Image 1: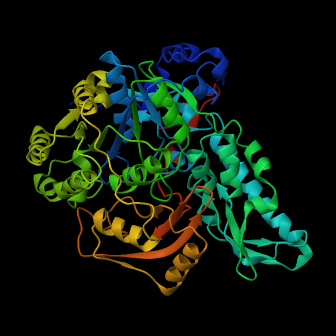
Image 2: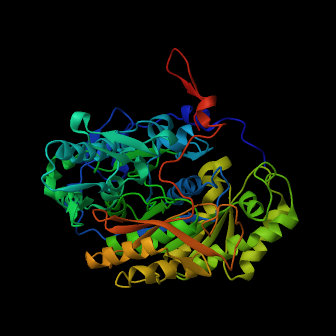
Amino acid sequence: MGEIMKTDIEISNECNLYNIKDIANKLNISDEYLECYGKYKAKIDLNILESLNNKANGKLVLVTSTNPTPFGEGKTTMSIGISDALNKLGKNSLVVLREPSLGPVFGIKGGATGGGYSQVVPMEDINLHFTGDIHAIEACNNLLSAIIDNHVYQGNSLNLDLNRITFQRCVDLNDRALRNVLVKYDNKGLERNEHYNITVASEIMAILCLSRDIDDLKKRLGNILIGYTIDSKPVFARELNCEDALAILLKDAIKPNLVQTLEHNPAIIHGGPFANIAHGCNSLVATNLGLKLSDYVITEAGFGSDLGAEKFLDIKCQIGNLKPNAIVINTTIRSIKYNGGVSKEKVNLENMDALKLGIVNLKRHIENMTKYTKNIVICINEFYSDTLNEIEFVKDFVEQMGYEAVVCTSFKNGSAGALDLAREVINLCDKEIDYKPLYSFELSIKDKINMLAKEIYHAKDVIYSDDILEKIKTLEKMGFGSLPVCIAKTQYSFSDDSKLLGAPNNFDMKITDIKLSSGAGFIVVLMGNIMTMPGLSKSSAYLNMHIDNNGNISGLY
């Protein structure tokens, strides 16, 4: 169980990348649908979907996780490893992932291109500006904000209430100074409070990820609630006649991006909403395209299964009419010990007592996912510090629950370290699909929130203030009661308290705000002290990054 001494970026730089056209040929994508961004990246024209209409869909596999440590537990690494292993076994597999955000890249968590010998490349490009999708989303979002404020400046014919403008600006960085700002209208004597979101939590990001084509994109952009009038009537972006202008900025961003793994297998990366403050899934068009291009699509949803997987299964699958064939629950010995009370600084030390305490976290994730499907396998992402005693304990525990636990070493060994897991994925995908969502959209807003709180988070109760109840009543009167709910809460706990680890019970969850994302098509429910604009830590990743005179980067991970 030796530790890899090379950094992720050093490993990725050693890769002899194939020309992206050669990668496209593996998926039978002709040049007419390929828009190259240099030698190693390309966008895929959505018109290709018409030529694939009669092709049967491949198998859909979701990779999710237990509650993570602050460093993440390797869902992306495992997803890439599984796809590479399936290809090594002679299957036609494609990994479909989210795009990294600059916020965590320069913050504490780092990038999102996998790790070790299970990465997507070119790693630097993907983690930084890539093909400009997130910049385009940011520009589109802030154009709408500028249009709203210009409308107010030019006379405010729609009678917008400045205190009830709900659409907010964004930037794709962790910048706590922008959590509260003041907007002034020059010499008009008018001003209002504004709040920036990180771009990956913006409604424009969600819209891009749930739109099927340009027409659907324009419709959703027009449906964005921008605020209310002085007499409390809702105002939508379409009333500013700006849908086409906004869509123009996203005309290329809506096209999925094609790259490759270290083993030269195809990968599609598109869309990047966070799962703790957004819906945490890659784009619907990327998933649908992947299902037409390959026999197996391996995808992941952000953070633990209480966030990303729940939103994938209850929101994306229902909106996109998707039915996953199998779920892989990724876990690590260190995350289990972390949930057993060990500090993040000591999770690499053997501690069987903490492992036995923390295993309840894995147990609950398994039990929760069985509410959607029984086609589940548990992946133990092996770290250099794991001991045989620890691994055997987890495997035995999972087997006693009636499921398979497979050790995966793709970080260290690439596809060769994920072959056993890939074989189990094949076995699960050969079984009958038994997926069912947890709730129907037709339930009331409160019923949907309460169901998630009790069935997934295992809360005793949900606390609704009078203000929140009034907002829910307003949304239902406006006709939005049948939208799904997207919970924004901490990723470190089933509860809304990041310090309540393991598998807590008998706790209350407090709703702090509720917002309508009418363009995306869901209601965002904020719980606890969650914020939609993160901040940088004292020991953020940017402190260790360097670039030399030849443009070589180090410290990016």
